[in-house]
Length: 370
Image: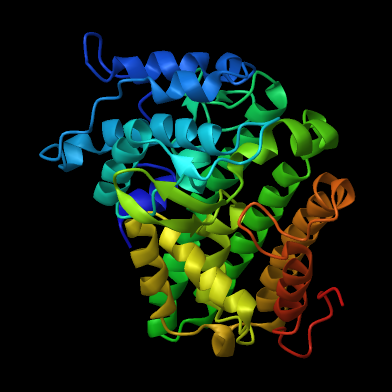
């Protein structure tokens, strides 16, 4: 497993770039990004956006040294595209103008992902530290780009960033457990499982903090619409036929899929599993490759003590239960539409994931919550 994952989890190998160099022609994107939350209050925003001159990303700039700047470019243009299509207070647009569509499609092609703002651009590449030598944790991080001025949106994103930062410990334990499984080393496997359980429970405590600075009504009405899916959208001058793309959603995080792959949790084939498989297309290519690597690792269930294995399952189920509760409070109570930002009937499927995680327990443990 690449050392970047062991040290940073699914966050980028270095803190995200926050702006383009002084004098760069791409600096106009920093100005647009800075002004975007104010511009979106204007009924003439879409007309203004159609008149913007956005430099295309140079196709020859596709080396590892260019990656941080390319990610920032994707964040800026991805936010602008989603703002245009889903401007609050207006019907969803069905045509993304060429001056936005062409830059977005080029950047996303180079990144190997669909041309829409996803979890990586909304969260993984969208944070900075106040104290560069401090923790990647709430209180020491802020966002780079937002749709609205409300701190509620900052908080929503930053909770996910801290959870992702904690995920590095999960990946280290998965790597160690995989090596131990090859040696048939039960003691090390059990220690790794205990470490994973502790970390996931820590991530759950972070997730529980969502209500501290995020109001359900403001979330649902003011900034959630901007991360919705694109439905029947034509990318002018780039894609001739209308297309649908899934919006930003936590299901595009690689953390839970990594745990499911490591523990070999079986989820019955369904529209849900097809949806989760499709969500991988919205993950960075390196993350997809790591998930495939973890899936190919030997199982550990037969080497594990029931309490250790079931403790991890219980921690995962508890994390999903908290997420289910927030989905109920922040989305389901606000609308009759059963679709989430990814365009799926999320409540039924979230419940299924919880139930099937609990069903994978090893019999004989006294610690697993029924």
